[in-house]
Structures are given as C-alpha cells and as structure tokens.
Image (cartoon, rainbow, N blue to C red; front, side, top):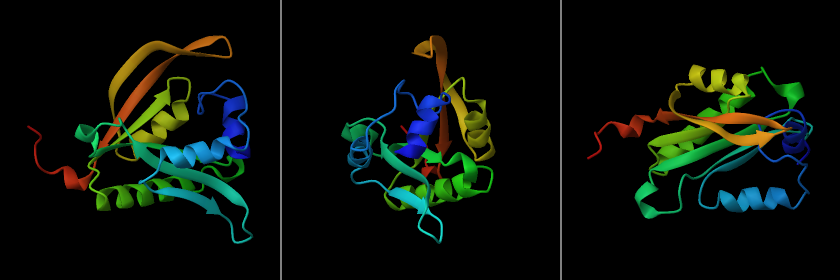
Length: 155
C-alpha cells in the first residue's frame, strides 16, 4: 500500500484523495478475482510494484474486455518494469480470452498517457472535468489497446 499511497499523495495516478489503509490492498485483489494480479519484487524481496487486470464491467457481454491498473515504486520507474508487467498482463489476458484492454487515466498524469501510447494504446474517450482532487478538476482519458486475439470484426 505504500506504493499506491505515494501516488495518492503525490499526484493523479491513483484517484483517492487520502491514503488508504493496508486492508485496501485485499480489496484490490478481490477486484481482480479471476484475472491476473502480480506483485513485483527485487531479488531481496522488496516490493517494487504491482499490477492487475479486472473486469471492465461486471456484465457477461463485456467478458472480452478488461481494465488494467499498475503502480511502480517511484525509485524503480523508467527501468522497463511497467512495460514488463503490462506485457505479462496482456499475455495472461489473451490466454483468458481478453481482446481489449482499457486504461482509465487522469488528464493530470501525462506520463501515464505517454506510456500507454508507447505501448500500443489509443485514446478512445475523454470525459471532461469528471474528477476533482487537491481542489483541481481533471478529465479522464480513456485509452484502449486491441490485442492480437481481436482479429475478427465485432458485429
């Protein structure tokens, strides 16, 4: 939770306004039930990040679409860990029948928007002034990546 709470307190990557207690981590794991969930560690077993897929919507008609979330410890950013984690989540998602991954990103988090663009996501939606954190309104940028299993057109 230290990693998640860092992003709560120092920016717009995590949406809550206040730090979350340790049991909240279990809620994140429950959110991803039936989907991949990873915690990244160094050789010394120091947690450097975590990420997971979860249902985009809880209805069966959206079973092929998942939303992605991940957080890398700030001391370990820009070392390829986010890309490795994303690639593993994509691989596992495809094995599960996922063909679309959605990322929901604050407009105040340009690093994440750029990361997702570099990793094959395209902006597909922009919700104006739907969030407010630190007394500042922000937009939500919705980005989408179609996976290799999405080869057939949808009716």
